[in-house]
Length: 304
Image (cartoon, rainbow, N blue to C red; front, side, top):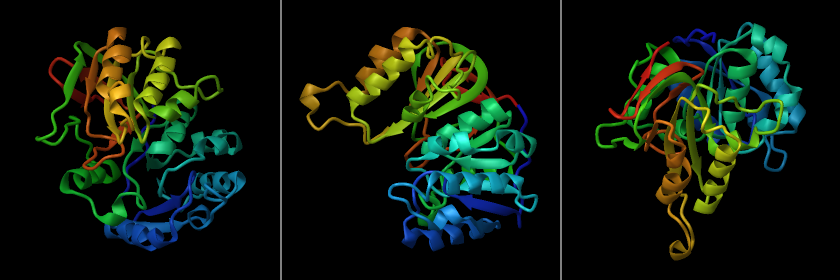
């Protein structure tokens, strides 16, 4: 796995919106937040377009990504927000060109589709980070900012640690080592049956989600289990499942019950409550990096 070089003060970074449209009132604060980190943002068309729930039509969003990777004057690519729509642009991307011009790339949520694509098909590592018009523009807590700065500029921290007051928990004991993959659960499941299907074999699978009822999480995790994706993992990391509650708790399982009944019986070493996903504070994860998971000790270490 090739690791693109990190950014640096004065680096020119493309702001792109591969998924949903940026609320107009957030664009300027998002750009200002990027500049406050010493970066020079270049605003691509998708950041200012809207096509219903998309940041412009599919071809426009794909063109922005292709152009950002091919432009030698661009040092890195920041997805300004998630939402919905990254999967639609995949068939329109010039993957051969992108593989030949790997760059620092970051985002999360719907951007999971692109993390999996660039890691598996194009062969370079990417970063699961908060995004300028989703979190940065509001100001970040110290933990999140420190993690983000390490992702953007390095040096990378070998240990992926929660804040001291947010301990991880062991769901299934054991140890595992492999390439880190995954991201948003719904996007991971949506990849199944496509040419861009996630490969979990021998890997550490990270999963998180937001605004899903427990039965929906149950269905998606069961789909992964029944497809063999969970059993093939070397380990599993479970992040935040934010606002994943039932309107009538008396007639629903809890998220914890879903994890206990669907994930735990697979027997793969699993840590839960990693502070990562649709939450603050949140850590930044090196997708495509090789990591070691010790579910007994509750530690995750980046090996390369």
